Image (cartoon, rainbow, N blue to C red; front, side, top):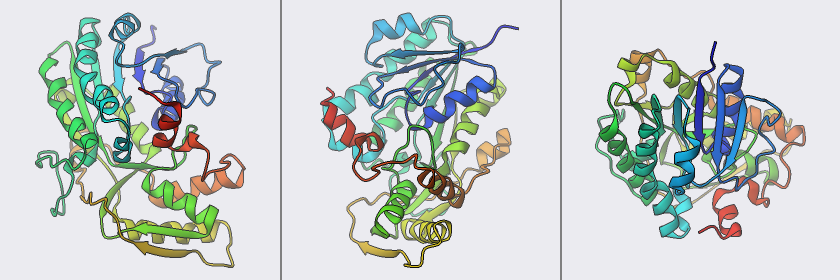
Length: 335
């Protein structure tokens, strides 16, 4: 039986590094298309069903050539997370906005059957509502979440019965993946707790939805296989626990103290923040429509990270730019 082929942009990123081996295990052929700013040594390169292409999504000629003969397109590549817009605005605009429509057009032209777009739950910005559903107005606070929201209707413009498009809005991802990020809320707090025995909380009252990276991958796997009539032109929130930053810090403190059997308790220090993003998402739709329910908690994410620290797999975690998107991209002088 012929294996389905997936074209995955950003496949050497944080979520991609965990997703790729899972897709290979599920008998897909996978083409990773990535700038490789963070390398690719963590990918299972010996697997004959994996192909890695170093490429930029702004390179339309390369995209047109390399996307041929694929069944699915998963769009993860972007300058990711809000703080990344400390970078050159033109860089972020060209990658997160300008490159998107040409990429969708190429995918359709090359007869891709299904296009899965990773948007973000940060498109909601600030909302007082207890349950933010997919039809909630988008109130972006940064260019990152503005562009994520603006790309969604672009995909819908090109979909039809032969070119299925589906959008998911993941919560802030956490937990261990082979290409680890330590610039995301739960992972930041865990790194500081383990490395410095102190957790700095900026603000604290802001609500954030969270999603274990394993559940992020499970959601994509489901969107690949779900019936077309249930996903075409649909948007799905994908989140689990909605907690304040302070509540996250308290969970991290408890788990790290247990895991490392600490005699000296971890201090939580609060300070002011200019990051006002606060929203509480409702993810009932993906459960009601597709039966998806997250399995992994924030506690699981922190324990997974603790295990990797204990094994010595996370080295120089406060300084090595491999863990920090903005720092690495600045150091590489990407344009």
